[in-house]
Image (cartoon, rainbow, N blue to C red; front, side, top):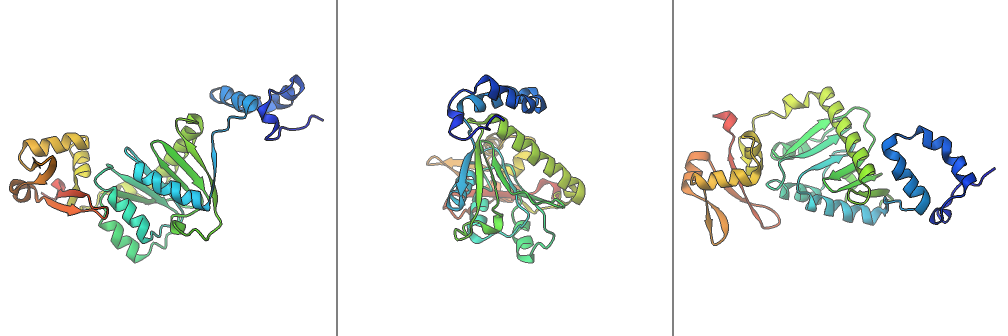
Length: 267
């Protein structure tokens, strides 16, 4: 019987007999996985990074802070501590939407109240959810850690991190599965209707979505129409913006400023 590969043996090319040993596995792989599998088999270039409890916390915080296009959080238990709330709130005017999928129905009243004040966060319930996965446009963490356990470094957790530029295939597979869970959760909860609840105020990013624009385009439109102005290189709210669009200037917990506007749907 041919001995299976160990981590050490992956550093050397396999023999012909070893190749035959793995042939049965190759048959079952999709064609788009074939070259990726051979590359790993021959040279041991497995791109997934093993993460300890401390590393998961550090990388999850960095994943949230660095997200520029998308942020999706999959966690059965949706109970957010102060640090996680602070991180998500500070992303409010930077991302069009933050998506959270959870799997336990006992959502605490304090969580409901806080989420109701965050128009940029879209939540949905997915029955039988046990997966924990946190994903941005560049990085993915698959782990045993719930959002509830974030920053609880005394817990024994583990996981893997996948960088899109280093392992695009695995990242895309994770992204596809996350999208499937989102579709399932929408079907089960009717989340599309729930998320159309009428928020009185919208961030600039949400206002841009309403008018089918990108956030920088929406900011230029607001400046052109005299609702925002540039003062010493910084965007400032004008009196016209306050009177015409109900504009408000708010300070995030990181010290940066963002703007809220009346929801056009309510007019």
